Image (cartoon, rainbow, N blue to C red; front, side, top):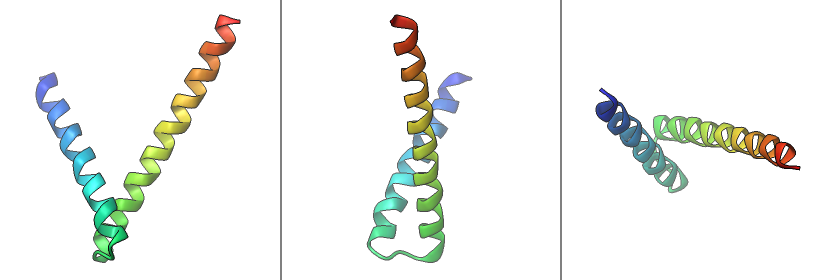
Length: 61
């Protein structure tokens, strides 16, 4: 059950990256929308990771 879920997540991530590159080259409106969502989710993940890292650093001090 976990294998198909990982494959779907991987396909979505790769598709989002393709849309980001395509949008940079002036793709259609739906590609720019998918690219914006992909970049927003990436930013959320990045911020979440920074918060986790800061809390681990405080625990280690």
